[in-house]
Length: 140
Image 1 (cartoon, rainbow, N blue to C red):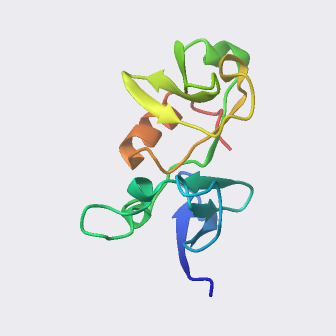
Image 2 (cartoon, helix red, strand yellow):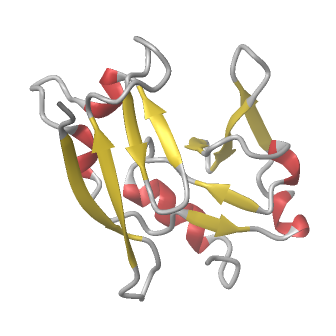
């Protein structure tokens, strides 16, 4: 039987717009390593258990009730401010270094040519806020 946890995250600063995310605990995702599916309005992420539960067994994503932006639009010029992209062992982009911190995103394009960063819940809200604040007027 499918068990699910529902929560909402605010997606726009100064806006009442919110999106519902559903964490499906029993849905096969990427095998045993990332069995938990976080499904949002327009995208989904497979999460490993340590990204879902903290040491006490509490659902970790509930610690992020406010996410400033789920998608950040970035112009080509602004992209140059994101100086270094990081990759996983398969050579896929997993995020960018911003203010010495790794900002995770879903790898949908060449990381250095991204116009939209689809942020995951791996980052603390203040890290996401800092990224969004660096690109005023570029966010959606």
